[in-house]
Length: 349
Image (cartoon, rainbow, N blue to C red):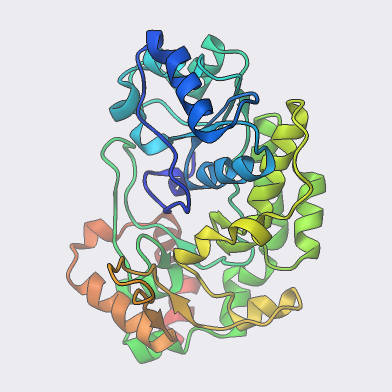
């Protein structure tokens, strides 16, 4: 499981019930849901992270006769108590789709345990693709999932490996900004990241029996298909939802997700595709970083904080200055700091 799969990442445009019910209530719950919504088709449960929430939204659109229930991965223990309780919850549904999850999120097991108890469960992959955003990393203590503590940044929990390394080396913000150029990106491997990213995504998808080679080719033809390394755009989520329905015998409506639901993850962090990286794909790049918009009680008043490169570096350094060095650990940064040639590249500016 990637760090991107951790709790409460994005907010939905729809509300899905997430409270688990005692097993004897399963039929009444299903009947009530169908009576209220008019959805009398096969019922669907979708379990996973914020991407799974998007899949559930898409299924509500694509399968308008089916009641769809989203079960957030981050609250499995709170909502269901034990893996046995989760199994009972899922048995109330005709179709069950889930992303993988490790032991530690709910007592009693992991996704493999759940699938063994309910063989109907169909796995689908989390979409993680870093070729457009090769500089993005996590920092913090991540050895224990239950005690995970990620370091904050102006972009929530996402960091620039270049900025973090520069801060660890004691470089000034102005010197750090000068590192954002093509020759540095090339030395760091940022301009050769496509093939490794493809192998990682295709391999992860094959591991859960959901090959993505054909979809990946189609997504690439549309240009950049990620908002950041673990937030796919709406058409990607829609393709996964559509395929899950088709493979389960449910004919999806022939509509585009973006036309009806928009793209909810645009409300979250948007990491820019750096110009030199964008050029590799025939895209337009920038250094405009967008933080997640704060909630506002006034309609139309919430607007995200935007940072140019200098502003993002300054805001990052301000946060890092207030944190203990041990809270800023990052495998990639540690590797770079242990490589004299990379350290020399940073110090040369």
